[in-house]
Each structure stands twice: as structure tokens, then as C-alpha cells.
Amino acid sequence: MGYIIIGLVLLVLSFAYLSYILKKELENQKYRCNSLNKENYSLHRDNNELKNKNNILQDDYNRLANLFENLQYRYAILLESNQGKDKEIKFCLSFDLPTEQEKQDKKLKIANELLNKNELSSKYYINNDELYIYNMLIHVYNDCFQDKNKGIIISPQVSMKAFIDGENDSYKVYSDYYVDFLIGKRNTYKNKYDKELTNVVPYAVIEYHGHGHYHLGNMTEEEEKIKTLRVTTNDIIKEKCLEKANIPLKIITHNDIYDSKEINRDKLKQKIKQVFNDIFQAA
Image 1: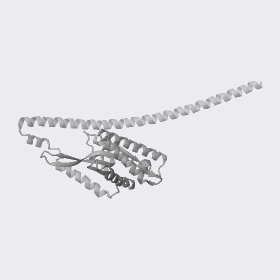
Image 2: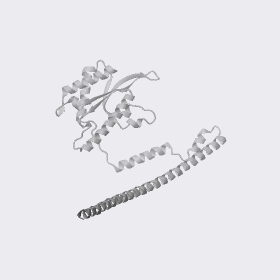
Image 3: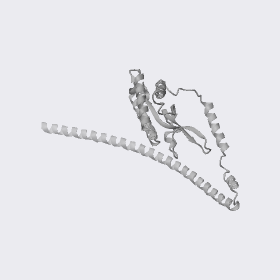
Image 4: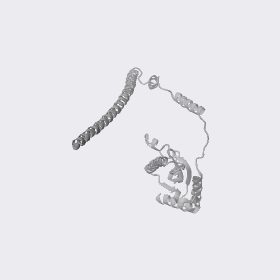
């Protein structure tokens, strides 16, 4: 009799536990169902917004297509009735296009609005380490390389769009980048009047990757990781652009020239000699 009672108790407990499990599962399923309903509602709303935007774009496209068709029709009529009068035709077709004066006036207006709203101030464009390296570059070149490699000009902080010319929209890749030091070389040529002129062409680029290149201090681990990723990406893009333009790139790092907390003059001098040797031997 005791075993029967124990068996019934266990059976009741099993049913109770099973009921509890089923109840929990039903609640979970209900929660998931509600979540899916919310997500479905959100997607449905986003879909409606996209449909509305698509309709607006379609209307704009139809309007522009009609305008273009109308212009083609007007152009055909003008060609028939104004043979040989190109200037008159162009004038008739440009009735709704801004003139160059209007474009420049708008540009000036926008510039004035921005300048009136915001303050401008000067800032340093070359830091202490870069200035030290710049002076040493000039010193080493004058002392060791000037006799055999004449016409060299060393410029700090030069925009890449100043010395790289790209086809179509490729300038957008490098237009925001600067190089630390551009090594240029004087180039003498004659113009169509046989007059001798001189310009400067890019010869090589020297980049300095100082301690702050990847680390700025007072940064969390996540912030430093993000900064390193961004800087590395920028370095890769700059390197690819210089390689594509056939401009040699040499890099001086913080570890190459530093002793403890300051630049070692002898280390820097030797490193720059090595860099110049590599540049001039490869030319």
C-alpha cells in the first residue's frame, strides 16, 4: 500500500512538473510570437516607407523623362527652323539652366553663410617630432647627397591631390590624404616657344609613424582598437595610391629613432641616410 501511495505521489509530481515545463514553453512561444509580430510590423512599416520613397523617385524620374523628351522635341524644331544658328539654339535650350555667374554667386553665398556662422582659427600643421625630422632631412641631404642628386626639394605636409592626377572620379580616393614629407625634383623643359622652364615633379614620399600614429593616450581598449583599424586602413590606401602613381614610399617609425623619451639624433641621422640611399639608388 505504501508503494502505491509513493507511486501516485511521484506520478502527480511528474504531471505537475510536466505541466510547469509546458506552461513555460507556451510562455516562451508566446513571447517569441509577440517579438516576431513586432518585427513583422516594423518590417511592414519600413516596407511602406520604402514604397513611398520609391514612388517619389519614380515620379521624379517620370518628370525628368518628360522634360528631356520635351527638350528633344524643342531641339528638333529649332534645328529645322534655325539651320546654322547654333548660338541661337543654345540660348533657347538654356532657358532653365543656371549661368556660370549664377553658379559662382551661389557658391559665394554658401561660403559667406558658413563663414558667418562659424569661427576660424589657425592651427599647427607640423608637430615637434616632424619638425625635427624635417630639419634633419634637409641637413642630411645637403651634407651627403646634394652633389650627386641635385635639384631636390623637401616639402612637409603636402596634399596628395597636389601631386597625383587621377582619371575620372579616382581623385576621391586620395583627395583627403596628406603625406608627411614629399621629396620633389626640379624638372627642366622647353615650352612651345622654345623657352626653358622649370617645374617640380614628385620623386618620393617619406612618412613618419610616431608613437601617436596608433596611440593618443587616455583611450579605452575599444577606442584604441577602432583608431588602429582606421589608421591602418588609411595607410593601406595611401600606399596603394603611391604605388599606382609610381612614387616610392619610405617609412620612419617611432622605434627607428627614439631612445627612451626623446629622439636620438644619431639614430635619426643614420635612418635618414638609409632612406635617401634607398630612394636615390632605386631611381
